[in-house]
Image (cartoon, rainbow, N blue to C red):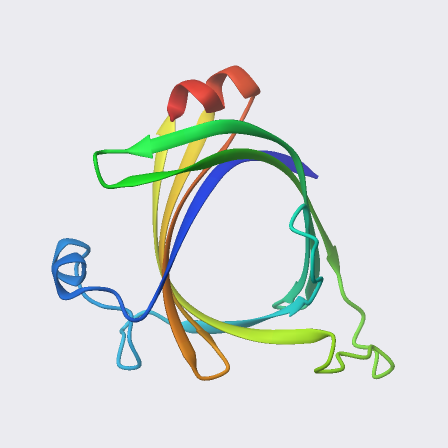
Amino acid sequence: MYTTLETRWFTEGDLPDGLCDRFGGCLGERSRFPARTDIYLRQPGRDDLGVKTREGQLELKQRLDSLGEFTLGDALAGVMERWTKWSFPLANDPSLDLEPAYWVAVTKTRRLWYVHRDAATAQVELSRLQVRERIWWSLSLEVTGPDAAAEAAL
């Protein structure tokens, strides 16, 4: 178990060309960055708990609180949230039912950058997401470490 401070922005469509250049290349189908597929549990009306399977793990994520608006330059504003995360190995059990009515596959191609400051580590993630036939791009900031150090790192 560990706690993070994070904010995320999602926009439908591919990453704009200007951002592709700024971040060293796009994340489309011919990306040099590997793609992975995570399987998310659909939970209509529930945005405080995330459940997914990823690379042989069951991952749970619970929002503890919202810390208010976080702005990044003049262009982006989002909500900074505190989350607790757990990860458990999945047994290779054929009885695990990932019925499509309840689970949705999200293919993600991403670039990560890490910044270490004092006792905190900040992760910047730029991602291209494909959910069924729809394409999205996402930018996220996530900081782990003691609360005071994590807040200072932002």
